[in-house]
Image 1 (cartoon, rainbow, N blue to C red):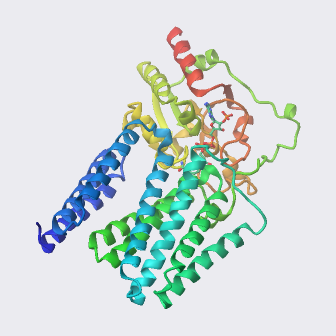
Image 2: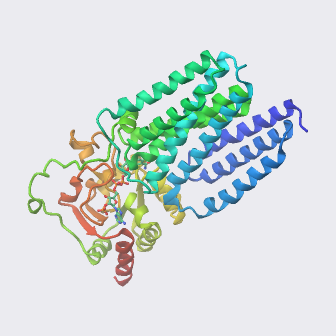
Image 3: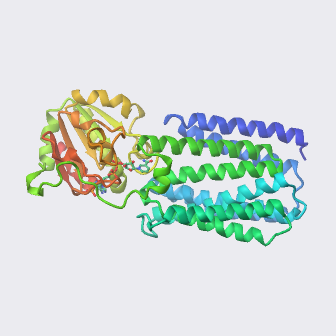
Length: 462
Ligand code: NAP
């Protein structure tokens, strides 16, 4: 057995590793150490708790650990990187449900002898926990395409949602005023669940990663609140770190998309296609030029500098390994090849970094948007692989575009732009991309993996 003072010292050690993990995760080179550091902190925290407190039913605890291990290990090993957002949604759903249920158990253990401060903290954390659970389940279902991803919108949607949240808040206040009304707790839980359900149903599938970051910060806040009730300092600090980092991540994502939080949560983006300024002209009046793979190989033969800009389509096609093959062949020919990474390319933060790291693209070949943008005017060929919104010049020029104001990759400034995608369809924002029609742009239609495999074959021939 450990004394509580020793356990506290170990908690400080665990907190140190949690903070170190956040620091490491700031950079792709050290991100793996971030995961290890967080796991070590968690192991220390669990061990200190088990050794310092009298565990009444160790069999239940070991059973839960075993179930967690058996279910979690294959998930961690088998889930593809493209499915990481929904995997995060599932673990978050379980985390928030656990926090809400521990809060409920705490209430039923002590009711009606719960003081007002404790009851207000418990009510707030249970509301946050239950709404996050429902919201995370819907986020998972949308990302996994179990339900349609488009936002479920109806007149007065936001008003109805807020009404449920307010009603849950009133139930919480009733419990604070009269903790003996134990039947109010399930009503409060159901109202919070309905609010979480309605909130996330009203958001488009592609906004789910931002929603997950916001819900993640709610889980952290409810865990920190529970830490006050249980008088557990580790839970307070870990919950606060989780809450604030989730919040900061959501802010960064919203800023990179040039959207406000309210627009993400209540805007219902993703329902309609927004045309560019010349779109009212007939299709034949706005011709696009297309290249065959052999044409691309010839253009690349004469290039000295190439920038590859990957996007969501590369993830869908799982073309990261083929992209790397193209890059290797070009580099062997003395061509300077860089990858330009937009902060919100794909559907989750770091999506492109994860995929390219999986394909062993060296980190020093990855260039962030601010660093690569000044280089485009001197770039011979920009190859856009399944990216769309993050290259759309309407973000700079068309105030009526939903992308207006979003920082983009300035690929249109390159001497030649090769655009690999399957059709003329827009990307996530629904905005038509003016880049398709520029004189220096050549479309190569097809699945990214197929087009790039053919390009590898064509390059090997030349
Ligand atoms: P995008 O604008 O969604 O465009 C992706 C393009 O990939 C589509 O136009 C699609 O065109 C093409 N594509 C799909 N499957 C393909 C395949 N198999 N082969 C070739 N092309 C394929 O993607 P993005 O440029 O990466 O921009 C990301 C968008 O998501 C931004 O609007 C961003 O704000 C939003 N978002 C990002 C995050 C994040 O954290 N990264 C979070 C939420 C929202 P075709 O159908 O014609 O092939």
